[in-house]
Image (tube, rainbow, N blue to C red; front, side):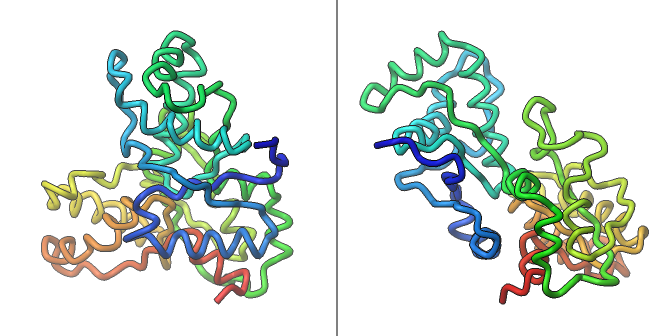
Amino acid sequence: MGERTEMELAYFPGCTLKTTAKNLEISALAIAESLGLNIKEFPEWNCCGTVYSLASDDLIKQLASIRNLTRAQSLGYKTIVTLCSMCYNTLAQSNLLVKDNGEKLKKINEFMSEEEDYRGEVEIKHFLTVLKEFGLENIKQAVKRPLSKLKVACYYGCLLLRPQKVGIDDCEQPYILEELVSNLGAEPVNFPYQVECCGSYHTAIKPEIVAMRAYRILENARENNADLVITSCPLCYFNLKDRQKDVKRLYTGFKKMPVFYFTEIMADALGIT
């Protein structure tokens, strides 16, 4: 297949955005269409591998990610855009691994002998980065219903920012979500717990730990006068939103805090129903 234009981006949804996080996909793709961003889901993608493997001698755990990059490459794409923070982190780290190590890339290509050899030329971008490159001022001009008087706590969690080599912003003092929120007409609040871990997969076996983490994060947002919390990660979204019933059980007097994907409030500001 011939080379695609630089403006056409391959969209990698990952598993969760086709199931429990469908509302993140729906709102994000509607935003992309509204802004004229050329994002197309590419066929035959598979799970990213869920968590980037830290084992340096176990290349088998990189195959899922690299196969996705190979498929995008074979279709002529130069850029993959993700919505899920975990998918972004996993794909981006696997990509860096093989770009920096020709021997490991050769071994992976030999193992996937029926696939086209991956050349390490595909770039991974999170949707937030795509929006920033599109231009926050352009987004501001597209706003139809400014989110006036709305105070928003921007929660990043871990995987958008760490490790620093794949982080989309400063790992200690990020501001990309705050910049977006400001251009939508809302007021980002000071939120010291914005980069604290939500508890991640402890939610499957130790939900009480996640409830404790969620309580601290949500109460910190409330203490700083936030009306709601936004996030970009499906797992963070679940832990902060759906675990509130466990928080209420553990902490008497806890009051529900609204939690949304950043794309949901953005779609509202852009007048997308």
